[in-house]
Image 1 (spheres, helix red, strand yellow):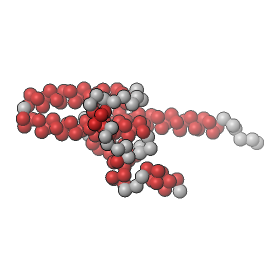
Image 2: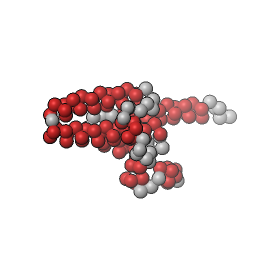
Image 3: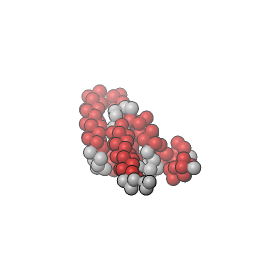
Image 4: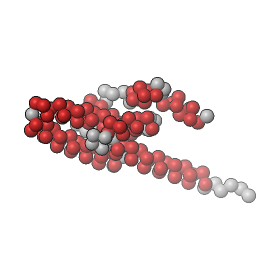
Length: 140
């Protein structure tokens, strides 16, 4: 009996849909306040070949840096720190909405700083490999 010609395209479509939803989940997790340092690192390693996920991981790392600066600002002025926390929470929420919509929109100022971080930097720093090398070894 001849093989069903529609099996391969359907499996291919299912794979594409599962990849997109996985990318979306990883990108959204990069904006979970305070825990985003962990999720950004995991996203950079697990989804190293996805430009969409790396874009959101870099922005999430910059937002984590702002959380750290907010804690330091508490020493200077608790009122200033409280205002900064409010702004940063709004930026986290905006990042979640942007990544849920599968967009690569830069958050103002955060995106400009994030673009200075090389895309594959965390992956190479943590694994001492390039993403193409690791995907080749996984396929063997």
